[in-house]
Length: 134
Image (tube, rainbow, N blue to C red; front, side):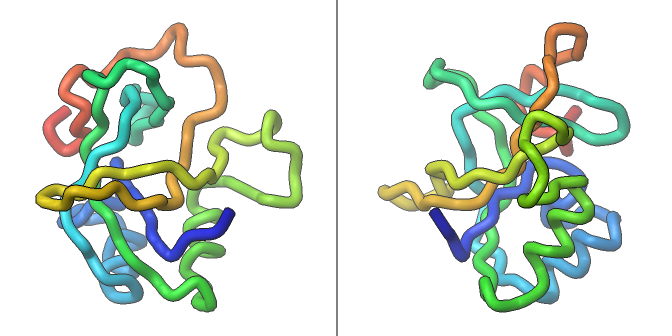
């Protein structure tokens, strides 16, 4: 499944000082704050997201719309260490399309999201689900 939407929840959020966050804001349209049903963990200086079946588990982030023909997704894959031609289980993140709820909208949008792949058993959860407030 393809999408022209991207959900970011960590160092690429709107207002972040990371250089790729600036690229994202220049090459894509910010649609607003959004949430995804999941849990957020502190990996190191960056977070990792896992999906959750509990509707109370929400991760806060930003939704962008981008041109799929641009090189943006390739740049993001490189940043996240994701290579679509390699086996998923060998990578720290995987990129998948999932429903995202946009603040103020009634319908969810299917967006790309980078999900953390390894075990989170030894990681600290970010209870607020908001990396910028962690």
